[in-house]
Length: 111
Image (cartoon, rainbow, N blue to C red; front, side, top):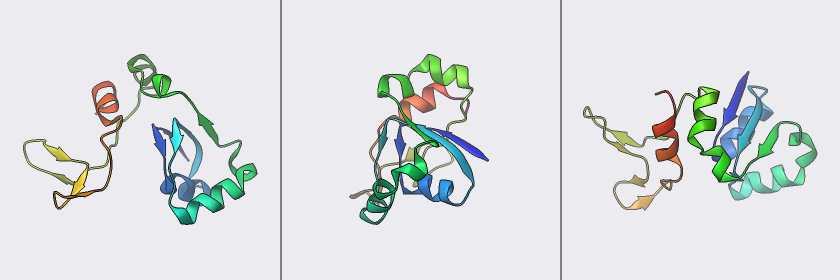
C-alpha cells in the first residue's frame, strides 16, 4: 500500500499501480519507455485518481519534503564504503539517470 512522492514518475511507478501495490503517486513529470508510454497515455482514465503532477518548485521544496517526513530512496548504481554514490553512469560512460532532484531529496529527506 505504497504512496510515492517523487520528482519523476517512471515505468516502475505504473507497474506498481497496476499490481495494486501503490495507491497514489505524486511527481513533477512522467518519463516512460516507448512500451509504457502508449499504455499509460492510452488509458489515462485508469490512473487519473492515482496521480497528481506538481511544479518542481513544490515537489523538491525543502519545507514540503520536511513536513511529509519523506524517506529518500535515490537510485544507486554503485556505492563505496565511504558513502560515495554513482547514480548516473554505467561503466563510467553510458548515462543511466540524470542527477535531477536527487540532491534536493537527499538534503531534505530523512535518510
